[in-house]
Image (cartoon, rainbow over all chains, first blue to last red; front, top):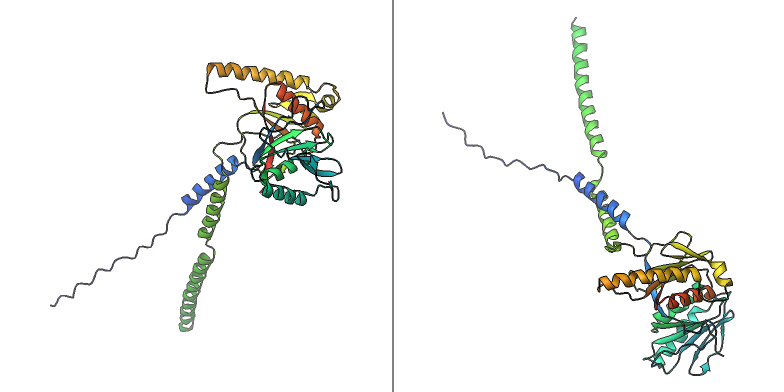
Length: 157
Length: 179
């Protein structure tokens, strides 16, 4: 009686799926933790210098040390002016009740091109000017290369 | 009898066929009803990556009062631990404690806001006392002003002047980061 040839042992196919449920659980926990600790409102700060000691009462605006240009941005109810070293540029009026920030950016950029070392600017504001407008003006100054900002409440004509 | 028997056989055959069809349908249903876990995981991973990008290990240094709307700016300076003064058109608070009324502060002929000045001096004294004990915690006179969008420069000027008088020389204005 002949023996039958040995049947080749077939490897069983591994039919195994990765357990995804624990992985999803972990991701859900991670999501919850991150959502709870997320700070959706990101805050930042603008550093400024104080107005000169008597400025609130009516003294002269402070001059930053080493600043030859004495660059200043004057915010009034009608619009803004840029001044420096005794000269004041003409008033740029408001458009639709808002300051022309695009023009201000362009003006500041032009000044920065001419005076590359100039980093300080004095923002002079009328008492009625809204804080939001002052911040917008400061933001433009910082963006265009004048990070050293001073605030003053005196308008020098 | 033979007829009856053949009917039973027929029924049996039909029953088998029906059973097979049912099994097939059940298998189909099983195939169709499977949740697509991979795409779900993809969504979660994207969400986790996005949240990790925005995650800050330091946590929030400033908490903003609900009635206070900060102006928006593109600056990127991060706030540090400082004394926080929040100013709205209604009130002035130092470290969350209401110290003055904004209307009264504006009417006062003197530029120093009395309640605020007293509170800030008290905090400054405390900080100086701590600095004497621990040289690492030096009193730098840092203050963050959280001003509402709608306040006027006049009020801001008075707040800043009071800060200056209370030996807080390093003034920072809080804004919401925009872009």
